[in-house]
Image (cartoon, rainbow, N blue to C red; front, side, top):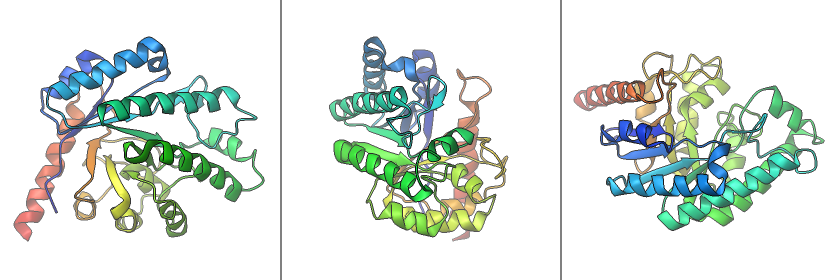
Length: 278
């Protein structure tokens, strides 16, 4: 086990970036929204990446936008029924991959989100199996286009979730570079720490990036580490030491990442206790 790295998340706004950089993180993950995907928005995002790199940050991830218009960016959405959403996901992913290739950074795309909306999209297919295959087919294409610059994150949606060993085996068979959100898996497993630990272990060698987030295991609550029910000592022992990580925590003030920094201090203290016990 190695000491956890400091990974922080913020937008491309200079005020948020500078707030995070004062803590000298090893990883910076950019939050994006649909407004970032105008020509001016893309140029601003690219400039922000270069600014963060100029400060010595080697590990940079850009999170694909969560929302477009009234929808989450669900890759399961069929083109025939959701043409605008489908086109936005295609174009925004292509734009991010251009930046990733130019600046040698990573982009993160969700395999799904959650809720009634994704269930409505799944209903356009003849079965859940067919919906999943549609997701895999699209992610296969993105993976081929993105190579070592793209990763896919788990959701609380049935089309791309971690926790069930059979679905994990199917995901592993595609040889994706995976992002693992601890809270999403914990919620999918209804607050079962042992199931979370088994999933972390099963997927470990394919995970390149973690979202370290606490949760009560009921809803998408994005809690500061130590305020939910996740057993962090057990999680720490099962992380891929070659992967990056960030703390994806709800902030009281987007200009102040104190909850992310407090999460790092909490996890670092646990890591030291484990080392002393060894």
